[in-house]
Image (cartoon, rainbow, N blue to C red):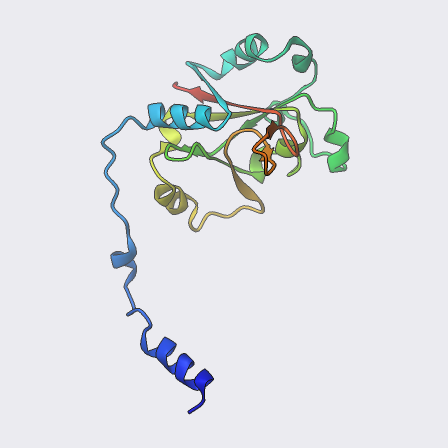
Amino acid sequence: MSSRERILSRVKANQPGSHTESEKKINVTNDFDVVAMFRETLVSIGGSVVEITHESEIIDKLSTLLPARAVTNVLNPNDGHKKAGRPHDLQNTDVAILRAEFGVAENGAIWITDSTMIDRALPFICLHLVLVIRKSEIVPTMHEAYEKIAGARYEFGTFIAGPSKTADIEQSLVLGAHGAKTMTCVIVSA
């Protein structure tokens, strides 16, 4: 038996046993305030969180939070905007307001799909990204998040956690290097 065959036979002999789906399910205790954890985590990675009662408050709240110049070109797909011809047609979008499906408390990630976007590029090409979620749609962990999206049908979906950021070897952090400069999550309680 060659060295290769010995190694492969050892690997084959040391495979983990098979498990049923019920054994793979991870039970997580939810004995913490998921909204507080979500807010704390998102702020720690460069995002901001605003809590409002009704969606009608969004524009007024954002006009106090974002720079005055930024609110001049607000693109809100929920207001009936049509699909863009090309992603580059969106390059002058100052603020994009997108309805998200849910947020994840443990890492501040927010799940969005193409169903609420004009174009897949919109969350990444705008200067300021605003994602709107319902307070009741914040899950504690990524385990619950993946259970939520399992079996769902969509053409495009992504988790976004905070604004775009990059850092070099000297640890100089740059926000907005290859995406939105700011990311605000609006949590609607009603």
